[in-house]
Image 1 (cartoon, rainbow, N blue to C red):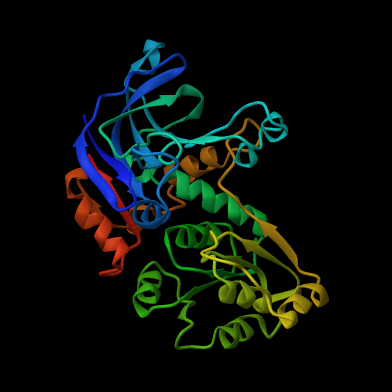
Image 2 (cartoon, rainbow, N blue to C red):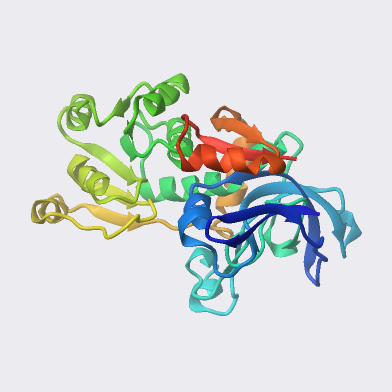
Length: 342
């Protein structure tokens, strides 16, 4: 089969590799759509994966073509990419995102930027017919967004500030709107991101490089501050801004992967204390029997509470990988979700 195989930092190749053979407890999935995550860019160009070569890709969906249980053949599924150890304390509580010894499709083991992938049956998330493969391939970022939004505790009549207008930020915005959040403020750092968000109906999108975020939050909340802020960039300045924009007793959800050291000024740290803010970390998503962000994600796609196709700005074949990755790496034009479709 053909796959995108990372042989080293900056050495991504579209090449023929052996087709995987499913082992016990696995099915063979014919990949139909796979998204490029923002984390795949440093994975390819700067950081690498845990070993080389590695087939990358962890946002995907496809059709089951081989299985021990023949009833599974022909079924459509997305896949929870984290493979928990099943032994640690977190796994015993079904908090798999907190697993201390996990594996992961697309970084720690081969992933889905390929024609086929053998995946664990336990990681399958089955799809209703109403959900397309392209939408289903966004199950992972949708589940991450749902997980983060839940930690914000924002709801009917509230104001939420989302710093970072990428795919996950916009999914959180859609989820917030569906939950009855009254004011959804989106903080971007370019005009094209603001324009894109406004085309999706988010009129409170703002370019913080040009306009006052504090002024907008004060205007919308009568000076009280946002009920919840979600930081999605992984940078110190937006993190501090979220702390400043949160109301007394409000919540700040830390979501963005840090790009470097994170630090706060003494004054901003005082704000956490004086306003008695609640800071929450969010990581990955839940996939247990009691709490399952993936089931909620698929249901939100099925009943059209989320409009995911509007977020897919670019589609490529695997063979067009150089154009797809350079588009994102060089930021040659505005993009939201870039996807390979097979």
